[in-house]
Image (cartoon, rainbow, N blue to C red; front, side, top):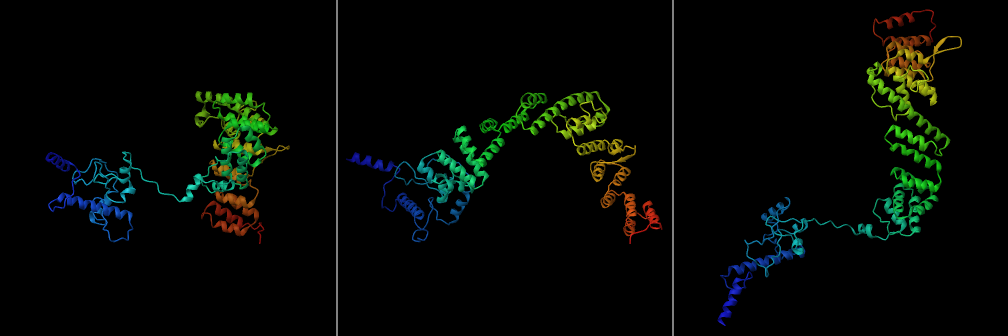
Length: 492
């Protein structure tokens, strides 16, 4: 019996959980009692109302809530993640009744921040799940109405209106063809393009092509939306299938024609236009444009090849005015401008002659004159500019005539740095007197202003303009001579 009693005493003294004693000198047992009471107090502080003043609130580390040390711990808990240590804290007596030590976070707020405290205790969620995974901040709870966005059993009308307001709404539960078409019809009825497009994408994924085409054929608004969507997403294969189903031969030909844009090489693009596009059933107007496109590209290839050799050989014109870009794939007006720069004097029989281009592509006179004027003025070839507007009548008399207003000619000449005398000559050709005076004043052509006021016999305006010219200048002297001329009958 004595041996058994000795073994029993060894068991109690060797265990981490020591027996409770009422002896005063058992300081360790008293300490455990205090720690247990504090743990209970901290738990009651969590689960009970804040208005209960009978309990003094303690943290699980044994410090009163609101104390200075508690505030320091709360502040330090926001400084970023600390290293975690799951080893038991041996600096304090063990108060557990088993080998597992229940976690003691520094404060209640740490349970929601998901961060470990400087005293290396686990959070409550980590202790309960017994995992070593990373801390993850819990997602804030959403209103109950928001959860219905994902699982609500909405009707067709409600679903479309939710999509119109930008809210999430699953269309997968609309399985029958009737429901899907009612969904599309409701979207069209609301005239919301974004919703129509969203429904069409859903139908494209969930219906066979022939069924979708058949239903869209009787819904023209949705059909136009779908065709535009396929063009924007460059779904060329499905678009061609749809156009064949609809028997839209002209639109089908245009879609085939657009494929040339994906061909990088000039020779390959020319061959594609010749072999696969010219024979397509275009409308008469579109057929003419496609033919002109092929002819223009063929001309550009010839001109580009020839000019590369001239540029490499060091021809003077190309040295003075180097080419800034290749001529290939340029529009017709750009090609005409290029030829007016580098091939203006060539005969009509040459492919690069501006006159040849004008006849071949039936360029209007107004467009041709403006393009040639800009090109020759850029080279400061004023003789060519004069020749462009000089015409002869059947009696052999010459006069200047332009298919555009001379005020536009003046603006282009000034933009390209034309001399003052040339500007004066062309400003005089402006028929409207007020516009002529305005341009002459703007570009400081004083003689034109003075002569116009003289022709209008406007003595008052002439005297006003006299104050605007320099003292002692030839313009002032000219105005004085006109004002002193007694033969002019001035307006009252």
